[in-house]
Amino acid sequence: MAEQPLIPPRGKVNLADYDPNYRGQWEREAARERVMALREELSVLQNKLYADGRHAVLIVLQAMDAGGKDGTIRSIFTGVSPQGVEVTSFKVPTEEERSHDFLWRIHKRVPRKGMIGVFNRSHYEDVLVVRVNGLVAESVWRKRYDQINEFEELLAESGTTILKFFLHISKDEQKKRFEERLADPGKHWKFSLGDLEVRKQWDLYMRAYEDVLEKCNRPYAPWHIVPANAKWYRDLVVMETLVKTLGGLPLRFPLAEAGIETVVIPD
Ligand code: ADP
Image (tube, rainbow, N blue to C red; front, side, top):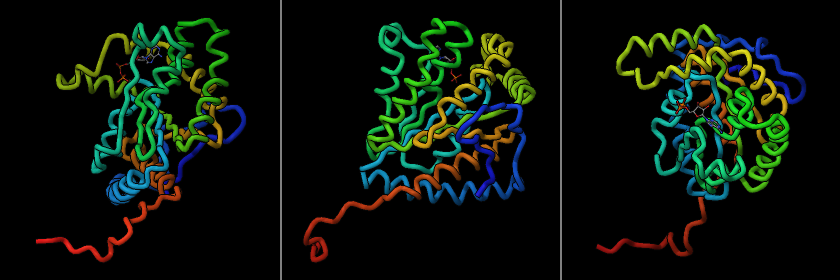
């Protein structure tokens, strides 16, 4: 098991206490091999989750720009049946989405039983970018932590296992990744000048994330702070957590139809 510093179930969170470079005792090659082995386990477990059809799994991914959300999804779900996984990327809300409550568009994308749903950004944007940029009044976003907890509790009580990952990179690492994007024409599409504006607000985002990690970390929907400067370590932590969680679900294949043991397939 990858040692992973998770946040305590209660109390203040100071992200400066969490080292984005942390990688336990792991070396790159050993971690890659472990991830490959876990991929096979994940594929088997996902197949069983689908066949069983009584549980859903929701993975929430949040990070600063260039934090590695896309890369994590690619790495974790390579080798898993695309039929059983639904990825949703939440962008700036459309006019229709904005004319409903903030959870409306989210609830519609929650995975049904048998499925793994992945949120690339999520309802947490409504207490992150919305808070940092003052897109709604403080009296509105302040209430959202409780609203989110109640929403997630409803999902959990309805058979959805929730795993939330904050991919924690350092400001220096973000600079390095932006520079790589600028140096590679194949990655220019991943960069926008707006990313620099968000980078200027780094500290405000860290405060907003700390509040999220503190206020919305419940046993039914825990946050995992993933040291994400090393992509291979990030993948290992997310993969281990997911496989362990799926392995802990009481999954079983549905019972075979009566009489199946005597069936002979006609020529
Ligand atoms: P990504 O960075 O996830 O690959 P984009 O570059 O399209 O994808 O960015 C999506 C943008 O949508 C981000 O700037 C994010 O802050 C914004 N966004 C997501 N949800 C909301 C929301 N609820 N309110 C305002 N902006 C949002």
